[in-house]
Length: 457
Figure 1 (cartoon, rainbow, N blue to C red):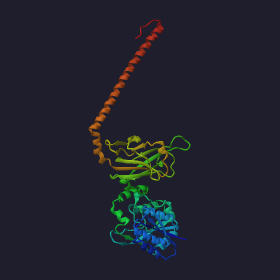
Figure 2 (figure 1 turned 30 degrees about the horizontal axis):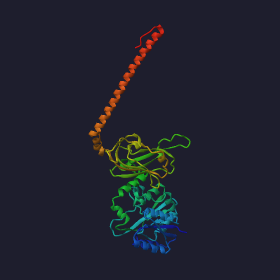
Figure 3 (figure 1 turned 90 degrees about the vertical axis):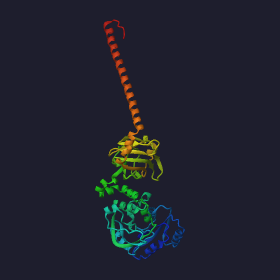
């Protein structure tokens, strides 16, 4: 019976894969293991030859998939695993023989323990420094990831969070997100204060490329959005003062089963995404929950403070990322607007929204068939560039002071004055008609009472 499944994602890794396998084969302890190698769409001919020679031995499970990234490869391996515990080993790293016994002893003696991790030896080309591994502390983990993927995971812990997040928005940060998700589910972490695996530092590695491509900020923001409540609980003071406290929130009303009237908007029927006001374009995803009932209406609270927001696009996607609805750029798509001013240059695509209070909102006027298509797993997606309202005041003032704007306002005022004058004239005419009718009535009374004849007015 297999106790531990050792899962190795493989992508063009012919130079190092045998070192990792050999480090596992050096283990001679009491636990049974299997090795699962997931070929994540390798393209290098020599890498594929090496992998075929490994597969031909018949000693290992070798799985193949299109290139989807390491998170997807690990999930594929976990789904095929026979063991009750997983060890994730990158194809260029190695373990020490005693790591397996020490970690599994801990996991088997504590049912609430979900993750066991250790310190590392660093080797390789020395192109960057190694990382510092610490005993578990959630506040430190929220600040930065210090737990390497070469860790032992209880299978039921992996299942409890639905596996690793495979989104491209979190690429190279999937391990950090995974640890936070496991913590949110209540699993315990255990640090072994020994160097029990070998971490290779090399130029051109996935993490090395990530460090150089300057995309860390957007991925950290994805982490903060996804685990916003966890950050709020542990960093209340910092959170309140930070830009990360800005959120957009979509509300929906649902049709009740036994009543014709829809339920009103409430926090229970809403979902949030958090973002920064630093002036960079961001994609926000607001997911609809698994217990969603038929939706009758949507309201978007696009911010929770005064801001200037360029709205580049708005989409409704299903769980397969198909577009169910796309905003046409027309302001008529929004109704019941409160606390939001819209501006758009003539013939320009994006709208600039100025949120003027702490509760700006508007309803999204979707056709009934689109509302009916909103199912669990769907997402409302916004492409926005937010920045502080103060930074956009010159633009706002310029819009107000433009001659064309003033001319339009003058024309509107003149038209409204003319309407008022016409109403006043009609009121005067009606008043005169009323006086004539009263005079006629008095004369008729005299005729009736006096049996005489009176010349009509």
